Length: 314
Image 1 (cartoon, rainbow, N blue to C red):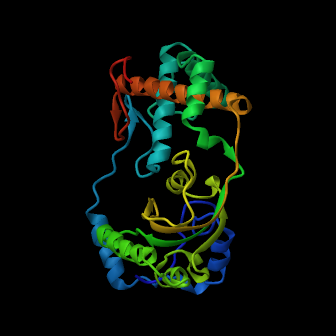
Image 2: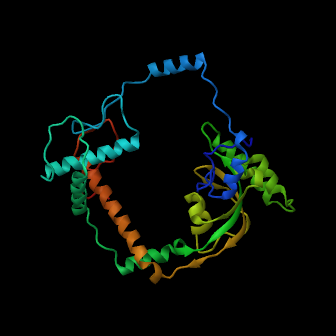
Image 3: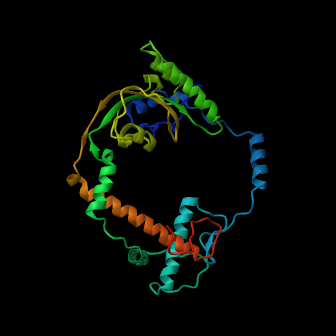
């Protein structure tokens, strides 16, 4: 494995490589030449593009009950298209309920602020959830006490084996495991971790022995935060962790150098926050059910949306 770095790899926080550490940002700024430039397209590239373009099927126009969501040739990205679809579903539902006037249109109209307010009021009336009880809040808190710790942080260094398009993930995992085993043996040289980081890691911090500095739960990818901070009542110990940590960016060998334990907030200090979290989760579930019902009752073409045909959907 080489040490060429790209800014798409890391632990998932605020650093340039995603690891949430100033060290990564500084390392990358000092290593600008590590990034390959894009070459000038050749005649062969142009021919290949022309051939691939000829094989692309005609674009399908997405629609809700016959109302187009976009014009031909200008299909939005999938996330934007889903947002347009859900907005049009709600608009049509508001028209059916007599909350908005019926319009003779072939394309989904753009809504003004007043019309959007109508949709929000309609959804609020349809999606009502009871406030969580004190007992429910207490149970939620007791099961997730590690989420209510303030001031906790760990001083980390890591070796990242990045999962990139086309990489053999199984072979990469074996390669990472071999490196990990070499760090877990007896009489391991003190400088071995830094040497392996410089040789193998796909993070800009490889030039600093993989040192990420002090990292909190908010500074790293959720998978890493769960392992380091939220996994159980017993915190992760110091030293090289005995297993690879797999995140969306790849496989990490983690060495915990120091830890700040932080303080667990009492239930009374966070009860309102817990209640808000539970209410938000309940409303999100009810809203999802409401929208899947609308989708199930509509003729949806050119886009895939979750649908249900029963109000008992869970």
